[in-house]
Image (cartoon, rainbow, N blue to C red; front, top):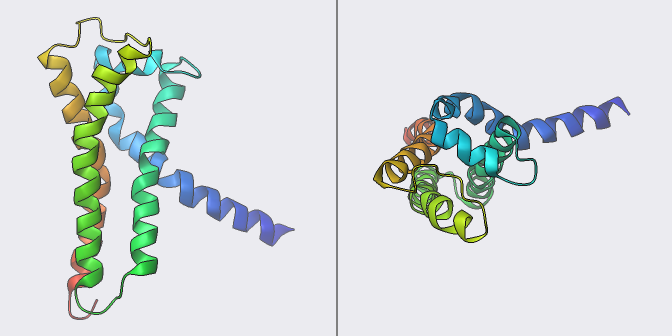
Length: 155
């Protein structure tokens, strides 16, 4: 029974841990009233902190799943693992920086979540792109570090 509990805890930590760490490192974005307004309006809870944590954890899943897929499907010979990790991180970063602002500014208002009191101007776009890039960077830095280590001849 204890072994099953430890195994379940390990699994939960592996799934939710990176998102919680990212939430802490990404938390200064909550200083912006526009970002707080965005998280405050998100369903299902319509609470800034709860929505923020849910989004931070959900956004971490592609990085975690992608990293798991890279480790299970890529050869460790040469720099293949390193290159694949960097490629995955690059694709996800570009996707986050492109898709998250579009979803926030175009998608959410179309489904009835009008969250920006400044009417989605250039400042909102820049804020969202910066927030998305910041979030992705939280994952890219450790992945790039590990990619560098794996690329070393002794890695």
